[in-house]
Length: 208
Image 1: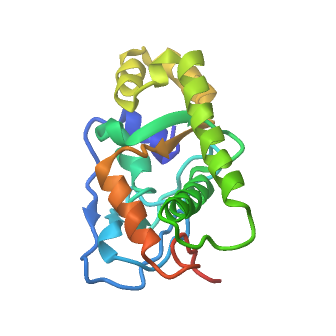
Image 2: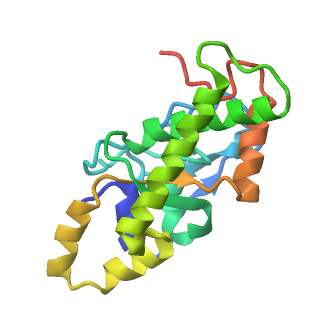
Image 3: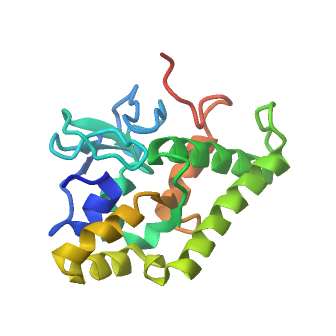
């Protein structure tokens, strides 16, 4: 059975073959969350066999090779860089839209802390509260399901299960998502580079 990239990656025998886009590359658009523009180094190539948009717990369909941003590539690499993610049950949002929301909120929070203007529309305090609420979901998930405290631990747990037991557990984890670890230096660099973009482009999505 095919599973979304996050769960499929937790079951994989080896890390995925992903590679960064050349730093000089421009006009990149993330195939998962729609993030557009900025430094080409913040985008990664997925091989054709692994590319495919997220659904709400639905399998990832095969697709041509695609470009994804540094946050969205974690869907495929979380099991191999567990220090960069916090797992959380957030079934009401697919991973791509969740990543778009987290990127926007995080960049706006960084701008607020730096004393820079935040795009009008939603109060900065409310945006910070939304981020905190998502982190609370991660903490609650770790209490309810202790094996989700680390993507590496979850991978070990799932792979240790007999095949007949694993599939029902995966079904229960269909609403599992990840949040980028805010303290990770590499991801912090990504968010800060987005902060330096002109207002309206930091968490910008490609226009239809």
